[in-house]
Amino acid sequence: MPTVTDAQRHKLNRDPIVDPHVILIEFQEDGQSAVERAALNNENIIWNGETYYRSDIEAQTPPTGDGDISSQLVASNVDRAISRALDRARERINVRLLLIDTTAPDTPIIDTLNLMVMPTASAADEGTVSAQLAARAGLQEPVPFKMTTRAEFPGIWIA
Image: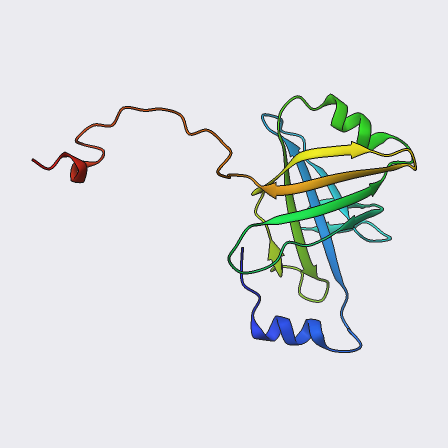
């Protein structure tokens, strides 16, 4: 995760905040080319030539600095579009969270670089979908077995 600069931290801590920040979210299923984009805003946002559609999603941004990356999303599911998309997914869903400053949108303040996945999601009766986001690579993922050779790791073949 990128570390927030002192200037960005100062700008975020001003009261009142003059320049709004917007969270952008991208969802993409492994092996699929289609990317669903959402903006936590009351109007559509165009960022880097892509349109992020306004949506009713509550998101917690992951903490900056070192450590585990995790986040929580709660989205409105009034039209059932999100739950239908989750039901169609057969592979892991990758998630990218971006926090941008609308006055300087070219450089995101936080960018998870598609390194988060949605391991669990559930629909509730009150018309919401809740999802937990976690780091893409973790200790729970199996590492494929491979025989090593002297050319790949010469230091372990001393003797």
